[in-house]
Image (cartoon, rainbow, N blue to C red; front, side, top):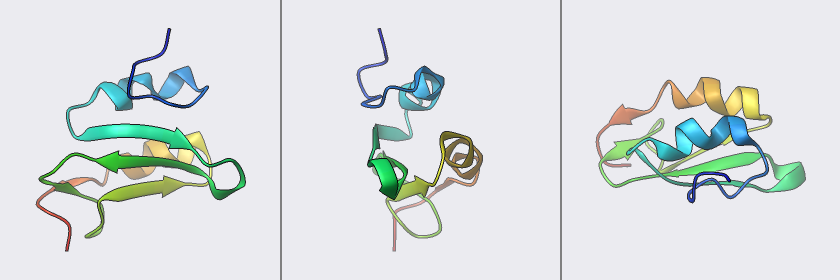
Length: 70
């Protein structure tokens, strides 16, 4: 069973979904894999992160920083 905040079919995203910086992870098909950040966290001033692939989303997640979105 996947982590409850991991709304994708990708079990590799369970660790990210379990991270307290993340509210949910979902798959938009052709529009990529997304995650929404918890309050107090941002990615380049945004409240969400989008990757074309699971691998890209995992890499981009490493760039999440403390602070509210712009």
